[in-house]
Image 1 (cartoon, helix red, strand yellow):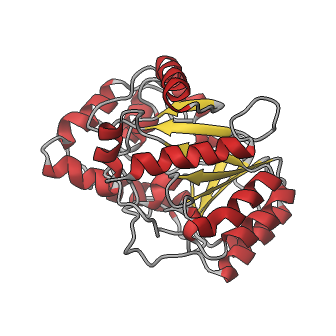
Image 2 (cartoon, helix red, strand yellow):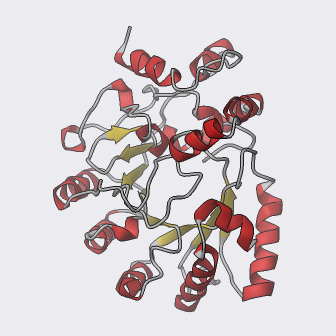
Length: 329
């Protein structure tokens, strides 16, 4: 048995749903290939620390988490980015704004790629002490991908906590004032909406239309794009599904909506994901399972050749999330 197969078998034990065909079996039984293309994106998780404890978080990020990417590991990330010509570098967390070295990382990564992305929950960046970071993001033309579950305050705070909605709206106004989300500024602001329960997202096109109309009418807000993604049954969301008796129905619903056409655009085919302590994964979701790239624990300082076309991707049943409906790209 290969290291990859052993790792996948171990992760499958997490779900134990008798009626569920494993994701690997689904691919094999349908003659489908999920393997790598050219690696164009570097994703960097700079820590599990977050000012929120969102119900849908697949990493269990929160205020009590101590795992933070160190300056040494950031140096390893910068050396990796300098060695390879990544088109996109994607900074995530936790709340990446809470890493004390985030401004240095952004400043040094920005010249090394065509597109630098920062993922934000819109509340960690709201404090006055974060204003220099906001200005840096604007100066470096960093794309911001911001979480906003709903334009309904009650629905949004069910997922993210009290007062999170008003703070998010205030932050969006501040970003618009800097030029983010406005035409011809080169400052891209994209929103992400996740469902607030154990169901699949609505049509992305229709959801974006509703968000655009409501945010403009009620608060005068603008943004570039909105993406709708299903919640991944891992971490805190997995715990919630189990506690509410929704796990089996939800995962089977994801599997029933499997769309083979989504495979071509999956982010894991062209991305390497680096954890807060510098280890390599095929995606950020696999970090929650310690499902390492290639089934073996490997540090970025030991990566001298990028994974290439036809290399294997580690999968488990949570991958049904990324392939349900329109997919997760």
